[in-house]
Length: 253
Image (cartoon, rainbow, N blue to C red):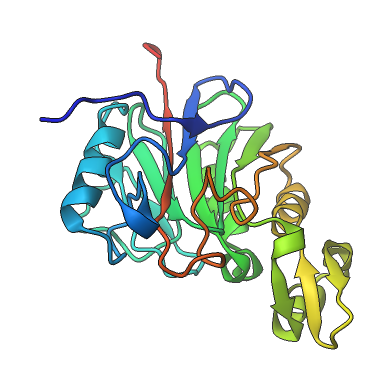
């Protein structure tokens, strides 16, 4: 068995009852375009490398991650119910301590959501399609159903593509602005007609705030603009995947 090393990670401010982080591309065994900590099983990387990278991640977690089959939608899986295989969903929720939620990204946003007391936890995969279809709102609905007395919610928006590197077309602009005029400031028109620069983290924060989340932290990292630290599907189509994991600490931490 190869040596286990502490993985480089990105996280945010301390959070009562919650532990969370996003991996970087460092600390693994993959080579070439996937160097080094690619944990994406649906890539063309050597499967033995992906398995070793996932083993290294698992060594730093309290339990096996609850992986999802992400489809860029708004379905929310209940991670407290056993499943035989990863469900088709882009978010999951739990109220069980030590249950590790996990999603994969390579430009889309990982979004951690929990109540202030750390009793209910959600983790969402939010690209523009997921955001536009309401994956964050659906996650909050599922969480509020579990702790209806919670009055305070927090969110962390992890590394994703930044506005200066996220060019989109009129279809993406319309998907947000036609339904919510308040989303307009998060798009900057380019000189080329029909082209926009979209602020994905800003859109996520906007929608979270509208849904009643008042404490929202943005990581400030752009996956496209930091090639030494992150994978980016837009920058390199043969791209690895980052993992964001989160779990409730429980009384024992």
